[in-house]
Image (cartoon, rainbow, N blue to C red):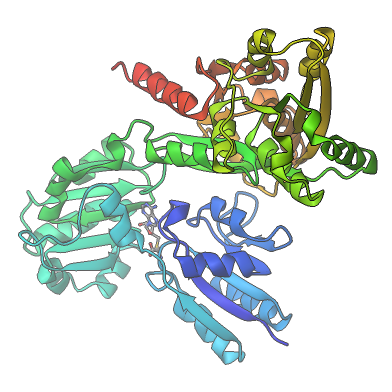
Length: 515
Ligand code: SAH
C-alpha cells in the first residue's frame, strides 16, 4: 500500500499555534520532513519511532533543492509511509506547496493540505498590529519582498500594489527594505507612512522596529536588524503603541527549558507560558510500574494488612497516582485504611489526594523529608506503624530516622523513575548559541537525567555548555544536586513549590530590568 502526504502549516513559530488537525497528523505520522521556520518543539509531538528529516539550511551542506524535496516526499509515500511535510506559517503562502502537491499528484500519491496560521497576520498580531482596523484600514495585501530589485519589479506592479490596499505586508523583505520603501514613496505613499518590522514573531526573540517609509532603511541599518521579519506598512502600525501585549509580559523574551517527567502535569509550563516565557519542554524522566518481582511482592504484602497503619505518607503527585493504581491492582478497598492518617509532602501532593476524596491530616511546612520528620516528632509515637509509599529513587533518610525513633516504617517503592530517551538533535546547538536562556529543575533526578541526556546527545562536558545559562531549582536538595554536577544555581524559591519558583523567576527578571 502506498502512503499519504500531509502538507501541514506549522504556524509562525510558537508551537502552540499549529492547528488541531495539523497536530493530529504529526502525532500519527511515520516521517516528518521539516525546515527552519517550523519550531523544533513540534517534533516532540511525533511518536518516538517516527523519523525526522531536516531539509532546511545547514552549515555543513547546502539547502536541499525543491526538486529533491519533492522527490523525497514521493519516495517516502511510495514506501508506504504516512508523511508530514511541516512548513512554517501557512503552506500556501510562499510555501511552495503547489510544487510539492503537483509532484505528488503526478505520481498518484494522495495528499492533504492542512492550513496553518500565516506569519503575515500572526506576527503583526503578536506585536499588537491588527492588519485591518475598522477605522484605519479595510484591506491588506501580502507581498513577497524576496529576490533582487529587478526581479521584484517583474513580479510586483508597484504602481498598482502601492495603493491597492490600506495595509501592505511584505515577507522575506528585510534585505530589500530600502528598495521597497523607496518604491512605495515613489508610487504615492507619504514618506511619513508608518512601517514596522517584526523579527522572529511569536518566539522569545521577537523584536519590533518601527519607523516611517522615509527613515526605516537607516533604522534597520543602525539596529542591524536581521531577517526573518514581517514588514507591515500602513496606519495600522500605530496601533502597536496601545496594543502591544506579549512584549509587556514579565517573562517575555525568555526561552525556558523545562525538564520534566513525561507524564507529569504541565503546571510549570502553563504558569511560565502565562507569564510570557517561551517554554521548551524536555522530558527527561518517565515513571513506570516497578519491574522486579520482589518489589511487586513487597507492595502486595504491605497492602494485604492495611488496617495496621497509623499513618500513610505520600511524597509526590506520582506517588498518589501509583498508590491508587496498586490499591486497584490488589483489589484493596480504601476504607480498609480507616485507622490511618494521611500525610502529604507538599501542596500538590495534598491536592491530588483531595481529588481522590482524602483530606490529608498533615502537610509539613517545608516540603521535604526533613520537614516531615520535624512535624512527625510530635505526631508519631514509638511503636506506631507508618506506610511510606514512594518512588524507587526516594532517599533513605525518612525510613531510617523513623526506625531510629522506634517507629515501624514500611517503605514500598510503588513506581520507578527511568530516563526518557531524548531525540532533540537541536538541543546542544540551541544551548551553545544561547537560544535557551534558563533551565528549570524540579527534582534531583531531573538534574542527573538532564546531564545524562546531554551526554547521550553528544555533549562531552555538559556543565561547561550550561555555564552561561540561568539555572532555577525548586529547592535546596535539587540545587545541591545541580551544584554537585557543576551547575551554578541562580534562582531558588524560599518555598519548594512551582508557583513560588515561577514567582522567583519573575522577581529576578524585574530585578535585572531594574524595576
Ligand atoms: N509560509 C510562511 C511564509 C514563508 S516565507 C507563512 O505563511 O508564514 C518566509 C518568510 O516568512 C520570512 O522571510 C519572514 O518574512 C516570514 N516569517 C515567517 N515566520 C516568521 C516569524 N516567526 N517572524 C517573522 N517573520 C516570519
